[in-house]
Length: 232
Ligand SMILES: C[S@@+](CC[C@H](N)C(=O)[O-])C[C@H]1O[C@@H](n2cnc3c(N)ncnc32)[C@H](O)[C@@H]1O
Image (tube, rainbow, N blue to C red):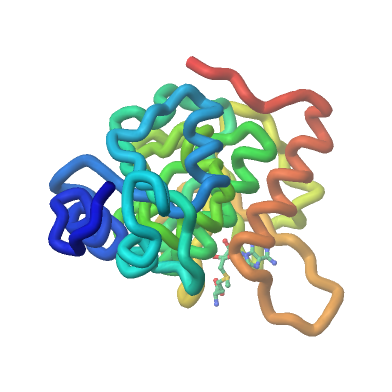
Protein backbone atom coordinates (compact mmCIF):
# COMPACT_ATOMS: atom_id res chain seq x y z
CA UNK A 1 0.00 0.00 0.00
CA UNK A 2 1.42 3.41 -1.02
CA UNK A 3 1.22 5.76 1.96
CA UNK A 4 3.62 8.55 0.97
CA UNK A 5 2.91 11.33 -1.51
CA UNK A 6 6.58 11.21 -2.44
CA UNK A 7 6.15 7.70 -3.85
CA UNK A 8 7.67 7.34 -7.35
CA UNK A 9 4.51 5.90 -8.92
CA UNK A 10 2.37 8.75 -7.62
CA UNK A 11 4.89 11.27 -8.88
CA UNK A 12 4.86 9.61 -12.31
CA UNK A 13 1.06 9.69 -12.48
CA UNK A 14 0.95 13.34 -11.40
CA UNK A 15 3.38 14.32 -14.17
CA UNK A 16 1.70 12.18 -16.84
CA UNK A 17 -1.68 13.73 -16.11
CA UNK A 18 -0.34 17.27 -16.28
CA UNK A 19 2.49 17.38 -18.81
CA UNK A 20 2.25 16.52 -22.49
CA UNK A 21 6.03 16.81 -22.66
CA UNK A 22 6.37 14.14 -20.01
CA UNK A 23 3.92 11.90 -21.86
CA UNK A 24 5.89 12.31 -25.06
CA UNK A 25 9.28 11.79 -23.40
CA UNK A 26 8.23 8.62 -21.57
CA UNK A 27 5.83 7.17 -24.16
CA UNK A 28 3.38 6.69 -21.28
CA UNK A 29 0.02 8.23 -20.40
CA UNK A 30 -2.36 7.95 -17.46
CA UNK A 31 -6.15 7.63 -17.34
CA UNK A 32 -8.49 8.16 -14.42
CA UNK A 33 -11.52 6.08 -13.53
CA UNK A 34 -12.76 2.54 -13.92
CA UNK A 35 -14.59 3.10 -17.21
CA UNK A 36 -11.41 4.05 -19.06
CA UNK A 37 -9.36 1.30 -17.46
CA UNK A 38 -12.08 -1.22 -18.36
CA UNK A 39 -12.09 0.06 -21.95
CA UNK A 40 -8.36 -0.65 -22.16
CA UNK A 41 -8.66 -4.09 -20.60
CA UNK A 42 -11.53 -4.85 -22.98
CA UNK A 43 -9.09 -4.33 -25.87
CA UNK A 44 -6.47 -6.52 -24.19
CA UNK A 45 -4.31 -3.49 -23.32
CA UNK A 46 -2.69 -4.00 -19.93
CA UNK A 47 -1.60 -1.11 -17.70
CA UNK A 48 2.01 -0.59 -16.76
CA UNK A 49 0.82 0.64 -13.36
CA UNK A 50 -2.58 0.26 -11.73
CA UNK A 51 -3.29 2.31 -8.62
CA UNK A 52 -6.47 1.36 -6.78
CA UNK A 53 -7.76 3.56 -3.95
CA UNK A 54 -7.74 1.78 -0.63
CA UNK A 55 -5.98 -1.27 -2.08
CA UNK A 56 -2.63 -0.28 -3.58
CA UNK A 57 -2.64 3.38 -2.52
CA UNK A 58 -4.27 5.47 0.16
CA UNK A 59 -7.44 6.97 -1.33
CA UNK A 60 -6.59 10.56 -0.35
CA UNK A 61 -3.20 10.34 -2.09
CA UNK A 62 -4.84 9.15 -5.30
CA UNK A 63 -7.34 12.01 -5.03
CA UNK A 64 -4.43 14.46 -4.70
CA UNK A 65 -2.81 13.45 -7.99
CA UNK A 66 -6.10 13.24 -9.87
CA UNK A 67 -7.31 15.99 -12.24
CA UNK A 68 -10.95 15.11 -11.54
CA UNK A 69 -13.29 17.05 -9.29
CA UNK A 70 -13.97 13.86 -7.37
CA UNK A 71 -11.60 11.14 -6.14
CA UNK A 72 -11.21 8.36 -8.72
CA UNK A 73 -11.19 4.75 -7.62
CA UNK A 74 -8.41 3.87 -10.05
CA UNK A 75 -5.70 5.57 -12.06
CA UNK A 76 -3.74 3.51 -14.56
CA UNK A 77 -0.64 4.13 -16.66
CA UNK A 78 -0.43 2.76 -20.21
CA UNK A 79 2.16 2.64 -22.97
CA UNK A 80 1.25 4.68 -26.06
CA UNK A 81 2.93 1.97 -28.15
CA UNK A 82 0.25 -0.53 -27.01
CA UNK A 83 -2.55 1.48 -28.68
CA UNK A 84 -4.20 0.19 -31.90
CA UNK A 85 -2.23 0.36 -35.13
CA UNK A 86 -3.32 0.04 -38.75
CA UNK A 87 -5.87 2.32 -40.36
CA UNK A 88 -9.42 2.48 -41.66
CA UNK A 89 -10.76 3.41 -45.08
CA UNK A 90 -12.27 6.57 -43.60
CA UNK A 91 -9.87 8.80 -41.68
CA UNK A 92 -11.03 11.96 -39.92
CA UNK A 93 -8.29 14.61 -40.16
CA UNK A 94 -8.19 17.15 -37.31
CA UNK A 95 -6.44 20.40 -38.20
CA UNK A 96 -5.10 22.23 -35.13
CA UNK A 97 -8.02 21.42 -32.83
CA UNK A 98 -6.94 22.95 -29.55
CA UNK A 99 -9.81 21.87 -27.31
CA UNK A 100 -9.16 18.42 -25.78
CA UNK A 101 -12.90 17.99 -25.22
CA UNK A 102 -13.49 18.34 -28.96
CA UNK A 103 -10.63 15.98 -29.82
CA UNK A 104 -11.98 13.37 -27.40
CA UNK A 105 -15.56 13.76 -28.61
CA UNK A 106 -14.43 13.23 -32.21
CA UNK A 107 -12.46 10.11 -31.24
CA UNK A 108 -15.65 8.79 -29.68
CA UNK A 109 -17.66 9.52 -32.81
CA UNK A 110 -14.98 8.06 -35.09
CA UNK A 111 -15.04 4.92 -32.94
CA UNK A 112 -18.82 4.76 -33.25
CA UNK A 113 -18.59 4.85 -37.06
CA UNK A 114 -15.46 2.71 -37.47
CA UNK A 115 -13.18 5.52 -38.67
CA UNK A 116 -9.58 6.33 -37.72
CA UNK A 117 -8.38 9.81 -36.69
CA UNK A 118 -5.33 11.68 -37.99
CA UNK A 119 -4.10 14.68 -36.02
CA UNK A 120 -2.08 17.62 -37.35
CA UNK A 121 0.57 19.38 -35.30
CA UNK A 122 -1.01 21.82 -32.89
CA UNK A 123 -3.89 19.54 -31.89
CA UNK A 124 -4.64 18.92 -28.23
CA UNK A 125 -3.02 15.71 -27.03
CA UNK A 126 -5.49 12.82 -27.48
CA UNK A 127 -3.70 11.04 -24.61
CA UNK A 128 -4.19 13.91 -22.16
CA UNK A 129 -6.71 13.36 -19.35
CA UNK A 130 -9.50 15.55 -20.75
CA UNK A 131 -9.35 14.13 -24.27
CA UNK A 132 -9.11 10.54 -23.03
CA UNK A 133 -12.12 11.11 -20.79
CA UNK A 134 -14.16 12.75 -23.55
CA UNK A 135 -13.28 9.84 -25.85
CA UNK A 136 -15.14 7.48 -23.47
CA UNK A 137 -12.49 4.84 -24.08
CA UNK A 138 -12.28 5.28 -27.87
CA UNK A 139 -8.64 6.22 -27.42
CA UNK A 140 -8.01 2.50 -26.78
CA UNK A 141 -10.05 1.31 -29.75
CA UNK A 142 -9.25 3.39 -32.83
CA UNK A 143 -5.99 4.03 -34.68
CA UNK A 144 -4.50 7.48 -33.99
CA UNK A 145 -2.49 8.56 -37.02
CA UNK A 146 -0.24 11.37 -38.18
CA UNK A 147 -1.55 13.85 -40.76
CA UNK A 148 0.55 12.19 -43.49
CA UNK A 149 -1.53 9.00 -43.11
CA UNK A 150 -4.69 10.62 -44.56
CA UNK A 151 -5.97 8.97 -47.75
CA UNK A 152 -5.22 10.88 -50.95
CA UNK A 153 -8.84 11.79 -51.62
CA UNK A 154 -10.01 14.30 -49.07
CA UNK A 155 -13.27 16.10 -48.38
CA UNK A 156 -12.77 19.35 -46.45
CA UNK A 157 -15.65 20.26 -44.17
CA UNK A 158 -16.00 24.03 -44.31
CA UNK A 159 -18.53 26.15 -42.47
CA UNK A 160 -19.29 28.21 -45.61
CA UNK A 161 -18.98 28.00 -49.37
CA UNK A 162 -18.59 24.26 -49.99
CA UNK A 163 -20.90 22.01 -51.99
CA UNK A 164 -23.90 20.83 -49.98
CA UNK A 165 -22.84 17.75 -48.02
CA UNK A 166 -25.66 15.69 -49.49
CA UNK A 167 -24.29 16.29 -53.02
CA UNK A 168 -20.71 15.29 -52.24
CA UNK A 169 -19.55 11.89 -53.41
CA UNK A 170 -18.29 9.79 -50.51
CA UNK A 171 -16.33 6.87 -51.85
CA UNK A 172 -13.74 5.52 -49.40
CA UNK A 173 -10.77 5.50 -49.02
CA UNK A 174 -11.43 9.02 -47.91
CA UNK A 175 -10.11 11.67 -45.54
CA UNK A 176 -12.66 13.96 -43.87
CA UNK A 177 -10.91 17.18 -42.83
CA UNK A 178 -12.12 19.34 -39.96
CA UNK A 179 -10.69 22.73 -39.08
CA UNK A 180 -9.73 24.49 -35.89
CA UNK A 181 -12.38 25.95 -33.62
CA UNK A 182 -11.31 29.53 -34.30
CA UNK A 183 -10.08 29.72 -37.87
CA UNK A 184 -11.24 26.57 -39.63
CA UNK A 185 -9.10 24.95 -42.33
CA UNK A 186 -6.33 26.83 -44.16
CA UNK A 187 -7.16 27.87 -47.73
CA UNK A 188 -4.42 25.72 -49.28
CA UNK A 189 -5.82 22.55 -47.69
CA UNK A 190 -9.33 23.39 -48.84
CA UNK A 191 -8.05 24.11 -52.36
CA UNK A 192 -6.50 20.63 -52.58
CA UNK A 193 -9.72 18.92 -51.38
CA UNK A 194 -13.39 18.79 -52.25
CA UNK A 195 -15.08 21.33 -49.98
CA UNK A 196 -18.38 20.33 -48.36
CA UNK A 197 -20.72 22.35 -46.16
CA UNK A 198 -23.49 21.12 -43.89
CA UNK A 199 -26.31 23.51 -44.70
CA UNK A 200 -27.67 25.27 -41.64
CA UNK A 201 -31.25 26.51 -41.96
CA UNK A 202 -31.13 28.15 -38.51
CA UNK A 203 -29.29 31.23 -37.32
CA UNK A 204 -26.01 29.73 -36.03
CA UNK A 205 -23.01 30.83 -38.11
CA UNK A 206 -21.33 27.41 -37.82
CA UNK A 207 -21.42 24.11 -35.94
CA UNK A 208 -19.18 22.94 -33.16
CA UNK A 209 -16.46 20.92 -34.88
CA UNK A 210 -17.40 17.68 -33.09
CA UNK A 211 -21.02 18.10 -34.18
CA UNK A 212 -19.88 18.64 -37.79
CA UNK A 213 -17.78 15.44 -37.59
CA UNK A 214 -20.75 13.45 -36.29
CA UNK A 215 -23.09 14.68 -39.02
CA UNK A 216 -20.58 13.98 -41.79
CA UNK A 217 -19.75 10.48 -40.52
CA UNK A 218 -23.43 9.70 -40.14
CA UNK A 219 -24.11 10.84 -43.70
CA UNK A 220 -21.25 8.73 -44.99
CA UNK A 221 -22.43 5.67 -43.10
CA UNK A 222 -26.04 6.22 -44.16
CA UNK A 223 -25.01 6.08 -47.80
CA UNK A 224 -22.77 3.08 -47.45
CA UNK A 225 -25.10 1.12 -45.24
CA UNK A 226 -22.18 -1.02 -44.14
CA UNK A 227 -19.41 -0.76 -41.58
CA UNK A 228 -16.55 1.52 -42.60
CA UNK A 229 -13.97 -0.43 -40.72
CA UNK A 230 -11.30 -2.28 -42.63
CA UNK A 231 -8.27 -2.94 -40.49
CA UNK A 232 -5.01 -3.22 -42.38
C1 LIG B 1 -16.31 26.30 -35.43
S1 LIG B 1 -15.92 25.81 -37.01
C2 LIG B 1 -14.79 27.08 -37.55
C3 LIG B 1 -15.49 28.34 -37.86
C4 LIG B 1 -14.59 29.32 -38.56
N1 LIG B 1 -15.00 30.65 -38.22
C5 LIG B 1 -14.68 29.12 -40.06
O1 LIG B 1 -15.31 29.94 -40.71
O2 LIG B 1 -14.15 28.12 -40.59
C6 LIG B 1 -14.79 24.49 -36.83
C7 LIG B 1 -14.86 23.47 -37.92
O3 LIG B 1 -16.10 22.77 -37.83
C8 LIG B 1 -16.49 22.36 -39.14
N2 LIG B 1 -17.80 22.96 -39.43
C9 LIG B 1 -18.49 23.83 -38.65
N3 LIG B 1 -19.65 24.16 -39.22
C10 LIG B 1 -19.72 23.46 -40.38
C11 LIG B 1 -20.69 23.37 -41.42
N4 LIG B 1 -21.84 24.03 -41.40
N5 LIG B 1 -20.40 22.55 -42.46
C12 LIG B 1 -19.26 21.83 -42.53
N6 LIG B 1 -18.31 21.90 -41.57
C13 LIG B 1 -18.54 22.70 -40.51
C14 LIG B 1 -15.43 22.84 -40.10
O4 LIG B 1 -14.49 21.80 -40.33
C15 LIG B 1 -14.78 23.97 -39.32
O5 LIG B 1 -13.45 24.19 -39.74
